[in-house]
Amino acid sequence: MVSVKICGLQTEEMAKQVAGLPVDYIGFVFARSKRQVTPGQAAAMLRAIRTAEHRPQAVGVFVNPGLDELEAVLREAALDVVQLHGQESPEFCRSVKKWFPGVKVFKVMAISAAMSSENATASVRGSLEPYRGLVDGMLLDTFDPMYGGGSGKTFAWETIPPYQQWCREAGIPLLVAGGLQPDNVRGLIDRYAPDGVDVSSGVEVDGVKDIGKITTFVERVKSIV
Image (cartoon, rainbow, N blue to C red):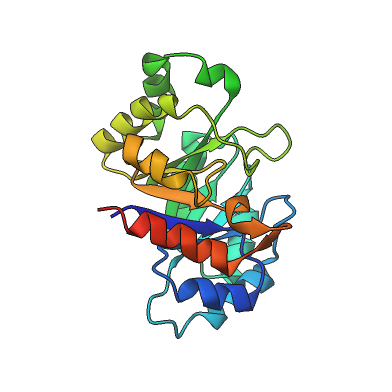
């Protein structure tokens, strides 16, 4: 079944409501963003869902962090996954896994319009191969020049297959983000069958998470067999 990640949570009440749904991951943004939270806020949200019957894995979103920044966050908020959304090298991913054993590493690949116009299977494999064995998941998102991702815009989905093939060979999941919302997520899954989907702005109303939209999104994903 396709996994679901709800990213950009900011309040304890919303965290509790989301944890009541069959959601696999919840995301906290520590990078510069309008959805940015502090380690203390993330810790409070995690405490709010600790008694949930089904506790989603907690993902921290970072852009080009240092190990000291990661340590400061992880000391306060018990993350299950560190999601690296910048230009982090394979060597940095190796260091994260060494310094924080037990914490998974997801690497984000930002897809730009230029990349979308190319059929560059060989170059995709070349860019991903150095990460083999050093990451536990890969996520595709639409490139945003200001924040790197979180643009709320889709990318050209026809660029997915070479990433998907590499992830399957590497034995890790491929998640897709970028402009997803309840009305288009089924089209993505039917055509490309990613291992997971990641949504943030697509389940918001006026920049605030909406539990009705989140519920609809989750139901539409989980109804696909």
